[in-house]
Length: 212
Image (cartoon, rainbow, N blue to C red; front, side, top):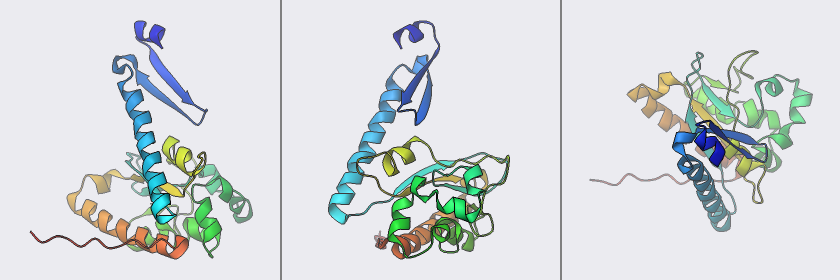
């Protein structure tokens, strides 16, 4: 790394071949340290939640700029995997970030993944085009789709204390519109509350707004 700094090349940090992070050397180690510190904070929060409530759910929230305007929910299943037939797709549930929900829920894995009561299905019902969901079972061939990265893998699959979770990529049409952002926030909270209560026996309390 020191040699790379001298030559002003890129530093590559590989973490158990799950994810490669690229930083220009002008960033030195600050961004690398920040990244692993954030992962450590997630681990602490996760363990605290498990100790207190016996359950936890990870949400890795991002924004995408893909040409197709839709929400992308990632469960560590690639676009090609989502395009598999139902029988083969069901066999991949143990590789997904919601495998613990699929083991806990009395619903079929495909229903939890992309059915009407899936997170995508609930968001779709509230006016947000989403993949995977009942009307969009998969992104389609050759379409860009973020299905999950390091944080999701690190804490839902490759962890001493794994928990379920998902990665959500919000499209630009929602992010850049104040009204749509507000609508998304409300729809997402409603959908998440229903999803976790229905499939994971994890009720979320409504937070009362404080009067000014």
